Image (cartoon, rainbow, N blue to C red; front, side, top):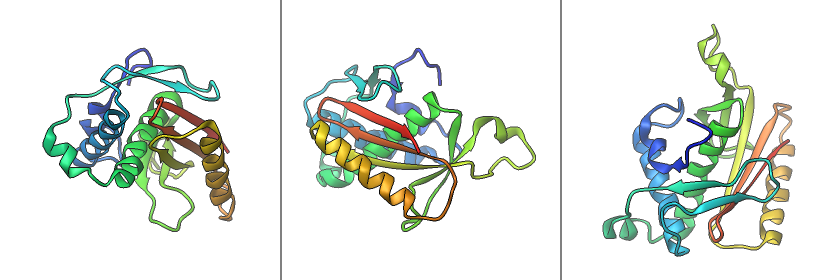
Length: 181
């Protein structure tokens, strides 16, 4: 994914991310678009970084249909899945990692990450880092910081010393907070 290009939510369905099938990617993309449109954003809206780790980036998506809106009436689920999609995009574009496996619940993280360079090695799926991801449909800076503390506590509660990335997506502005642990 080119660093200069907007975040194209459709890219999540490309099948290029080892742990994201095209069907899952399309679902995550649709959920993110639902949350953005719920907050009255249109394709091309710029997502800003709350801590400056990543540059502001426009997010683009295809028009969301009425059927899609009916499919995502549970906005809590859409927020969780949509934030997952944007978190994966942030990892892909702005870190050395790629998502290689979705972690089971109760594991202290949402995704296992591997170095992109390791994908061509003898052990391509070595779990080099973790991703803990969360979404807020519409919140304040205080909400985002509180969520970040919760995610850091969750990561630290597990004895696994593997590095971690925490990504919080807030759809109201939209904004993100991405931090290495």
